[in-house]
Length: 220
Image 1 (cartoon, rainbow, N blue to C red):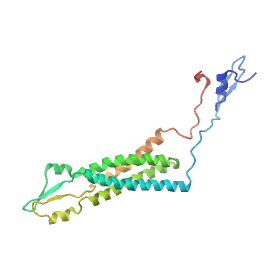
Image 2 (image 1 turned 120 degrees about the vertical axis):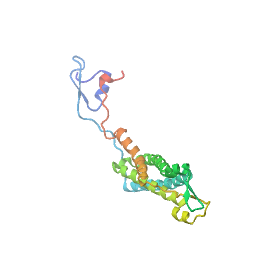
Image 3 (image 1 turned 90 degrees about the vertical axis):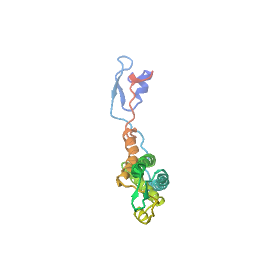
Image 4 (image 1 turned 90 degrees about the horizontal axis):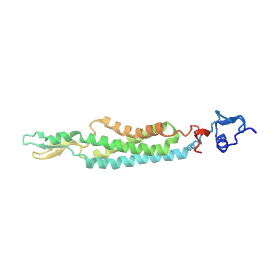
C-alpha cells in the first residue's frame, strides 16, 4: 500500500504543493514540497463603465469635501486685524502678528486629515486598477485643496490693499483669507497618498500562493 494513510498525512496530501513518497505503513511516507501551488483567486477587473463611475464618485467627493472644508477653514482661522491710526499708519498687536500665518497652519492640518480620508476611499474604490490609484488619490486631494482655498478666499475678506487704502482712522481692517505659501497644498496630496502606500505595502497580496500547511504543523 503506497500513500498517506494516517488522517493527518491524508489531510496534508490534499494541500497544494505537497506529495508523498514512500510506504506509509512500513517505512513511513516522506512529504516532498513541490511547486504546484494554486494561486489565490484574484479580484475581477473593473469594466470601463464601472471604472468611470467610480472615478466620477471620487471627483464628486473631492469637490464636495473641498467646498465644505473651505467653509470650515473660513470659520476656524483668526485673521490678523490692522487698525488705522490718525496719521494713516496701519498697526496691529502681537496676537495679530502671530495669527498672520494661521490660515496656512489650519490649511495644512485640514489638508492632511481630508487627504487621508480621500486616500482611504480611493483605495477602497479603485485598488483593482493597480498603481494608477496613487495618481487618482493625489489628484483628488489636490482638487479638494484648491476648492477649499477658493471657497475660503471668496467667503473671507479680499482685496486687502484696496480696503486699507480707503480705510478711515480708527477703522479695523482684517487681512484677506488666503494661502500665503502654495506649498501648503502638498499636505493635501501627502495625506491622499499615505493610505494608498500603507495598504499597498502592508495588505496581503491577492496574487500570492496559498500558504502551505505541512503535516507536522497540523493542530492534531
